[in-house]
Image 1 (tube, rainbow, N blue to C red):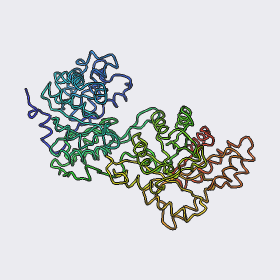
Image 2 (cartoon, rainbow, N blue to C red):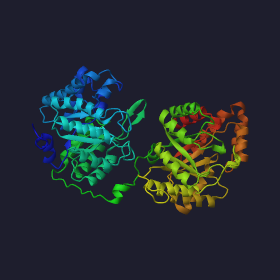
Image 3 (cartoon, helix red, strand yellow):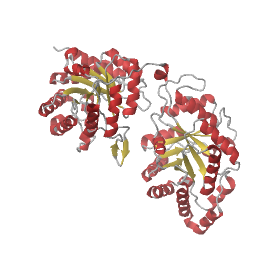
Image 4 (cartoon, rainbow, N blue to C red):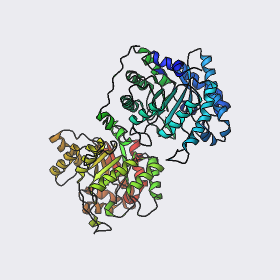
Amino acid sequence: MMTKAESKFISLLEASKLPLLADGAMGTMLHSHGVGFDQCFDALNLTNPAITGEVHRAYIDAGAQVIYSNTFGANRYKLSEHGLEDRVAEINRAGVELARRVVAGSYKDVLVGGDVGPLGVRLAPYGRVQPEQAREIFNEQISALCEAGADFLVIETFSDLYEIREAIAAAGKFCTLPILATVTFTRDDRTLLGDTPTKVARTLHELGADVIGANCSGGPAQLRRILEEMRAATPEARFAIKPNAGWPEHVGGRVMYSASPDYFGEYVEAFAELGVKLVGGCCGTTPEHIAAMDSKLKSLPEDITIQAVYATQESTARRDLAPKGETQLAKKLKQGHFAISVEMDPPRGLSAHKCLAGASLLVEAGTDVINVADSPMARMRMSPWAVCDLIQRNVDVETTLHFPTRGRNLLKLQGDLLAAHALDIRNVFVVMGDPTSIGDYPDAMDDYDMAPSGLIKLIKQRFNTGVDHAGADIGQPTSFFVGCALNLLPSNPEREIKVLRRKINNGADFALTQPIYQPDKALAFLNLYEDEYGPLGIPILAGVLPLYGTRHAAFLHNEVPGITIPDETLERLENAGEGAPQEGVQIAIEDIQAMKSWAQGVYIMPPFSRYDLSAEIIEAVKES
């Protein structure tokens, strides 16, 4: 029996400094050929081998030297979802044999990896499946792949080190084929269970995997960061990298990936310089991505210089503090997209159904992010954390959490920040908050340990670097995108500029303003700031509160500090009569058009929860 050292796969990896080129996504290509995500991709090895073979052939023609068998989900647990649990061996053997037939027909020397994915169930202690049960399931699949003639085993896209340990143990028991083991990471460069690249690399290497690395996750930029840390932890290991074509986005009911083939081609050189032994693509990648990578590899010198990577406290504890896992709001503002944000108030009781229905309407209209207020007007309402989480999970839109310092001491501030981050709420809008004296519980505690500018500094200069207020390690850096409040029509412009300057210096990423009904005067304030300090430097989302009628306008004008409504606007509402709400919508649209020259987005506050009026405004702005 051939040993691992004698295998062709290992020999090819060691023969050159340049990496072997693997294939790209199988699932993406099958779906593009009309196979629904509800179908069993692995069963196509039996029911429609031609379509799977076509994908293999396309990757080989694009330059792939290694292809993975179409067996990623061919284990007993996942196949049982399609009533195929008794055909595990048959489907896995067919997957390898089909890949071998395609290779033979291509007249190229291409290797076949027997692909093994996660079981789709949680192992103890985080689930009910015991390790010995998992190993038995892996045994069944891996033995079939080995018997069918795979050149090596691929154990990929795992997020649980307990589970991948059982897969590697099963592989070592049934054959002497080399093992390639890769793990997937979340946006914060950790696995779903919180393991760092350092821990993953050391664990996989100690378990005896011949090649280790990362796949899936985000795009090439993220996996380059992860690779550097893995190499620093285990410099003696061989590495494989197969990134997604960026983070997936849902557009018109379709899953879209943004990273282009040319972008992948450029990153191949970076991976080669880091000593990667095998490189390819994962979700969203196509033969065009592989062809671009092949073209770039062929242009590189065979004696390419491998960069040294050194483990340091900075790299292992809080490495790469550049923006990572950026929120969609952050990306859109960076790209110059005119962002639309809409405010929603949490419900007064237990039911969040109206909130979710309103959020769905706003998303259909085209809003980019939902802002969730925290006890507006100091009225008792559901926790905004819960509402943000419900909206993000059920409506699939990003949220911004309003985060007042009112009523929070230093302990609660920091605990609440950790809670928000754990719920994947990364946009936070820091404000003082309405005083409790005006709300339902005027005698409630209204103290605070930190002003908004101080909280911004705590988030950006402490939490986002991985430590708390006292300098204690919180395990990993957070990645909050922080907004501050801004009054563009202040009674004391000098004081407002001074406070704004402090917020920006402390790290504010964007600003939300109070409702604006005089765009020209708002611009005058910005010009005043620029005359003293230069361009503002952070994007502004201008506040828009559609006027519902003359009484609404009179209340805002007379009783809300910082809001002034021009006489001509009041007159338009008066003349509109019963059509005042629609006239208010038209005024808001005109104000937004006037503010587009200096604002990078709008922050719409629906009057009296009339989300339908906000939707009209959004649609009009999108069309203009």
